[in-house]
Image (cartoon, rainbow, N blue to C red):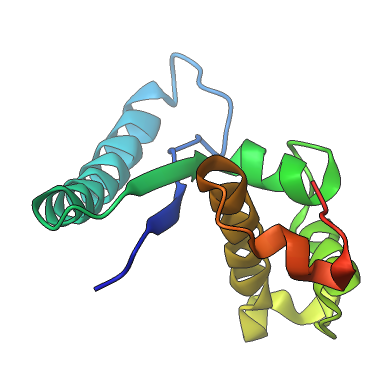
Length: 131
C-alpha cells in the first residue's frame, strides 16, 4: 500500500487553433481523450479515498516550473534539469525512443509532492534543499 500518490494531472490541449471549420474535429478528439483520462483519474482517486491514501495531481505547467522555472519548458529542458539536479545521464535528444522524459517528469512530481506534504525528499539532494 503506498503512503502517497502523486501524478501528472493531464489536461487535453488542442494541437491546432480552434476555428469554426475545425471545432468538430477538436471536440471529437477532446471528448475521447477527456473521457479516458477522467476514467483513469476517477478509478485512482476512488481507490485512494477507500484506502485512506493521500492522492494529488499536479498540472503540467507546475511540474515544468518546478524543474525549469518556465511553465512551458520543452521536454529537452526537463531532461536537462533532471540530469543537473539528480545527477542522471539521460540523453535529451532521444527521449521519444527511451521515455526518459517521463522519468524526469516523475522526479519533479516527487519534489512537488515533497513540497506539499513535507516528506523531506528534497533535503537529500546534494545535501541542500532545492525548490
